[in-house]
Amino acid sequence: MKRVALFPGSFDPFTKGHEDIVLRGLGLFDEIIIAIGHNTEKSNRYIKIDKMVSLIRDTFKAFPNISVQTYAELTAEFARKNNAKFLLRGLRNTTDFEYENSIGQVNRYLNAELESVFLITSPQFASLSSSIIREVHRYGGDVSMLLPYKL
Image 1 (cartoon, one colour):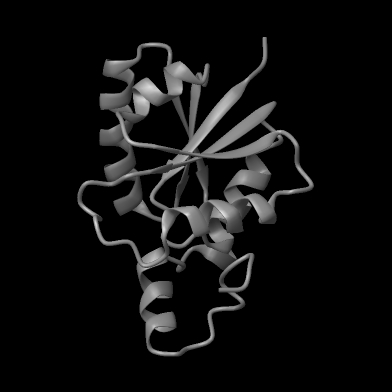
Image 2 (image 1 turned 120 degrees about the horizontal axis):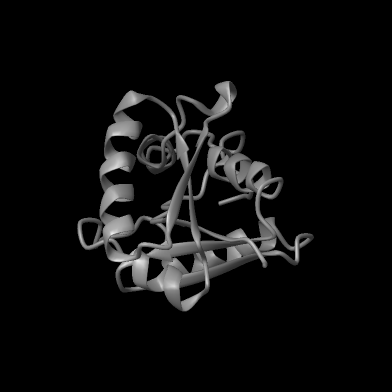
């Protein structure tokens, strides 16, 4: 049976830390779907979804087992529709763990076949966050070393 993982997030923007989690996830899964969700609490995106999809697809163009999709429904339901039995998530710190643990529990309640798999962020990416990158970029700072593509 094919092991399909969903890597969901708002990815605004998709960082080198996200890229690292996906590439490491390839050692565990046959296929990874990067799923850009429409987050109701983040209605005003910094980078438009269509552009983000294009940038991420280009980043992983050499990997036919990595795809990028968007969705506007419960993550557990989107996973079910895509035959994904795993949610791939990265953890930078204990705050991330608390947040991701709660979401993982709810997703498991909504879809009993869905397992959350957490990878500890590589040390060089532990301080990266999309919100920090947005702020640096917004004020003209160089973010080229923090992203796997050029903005």
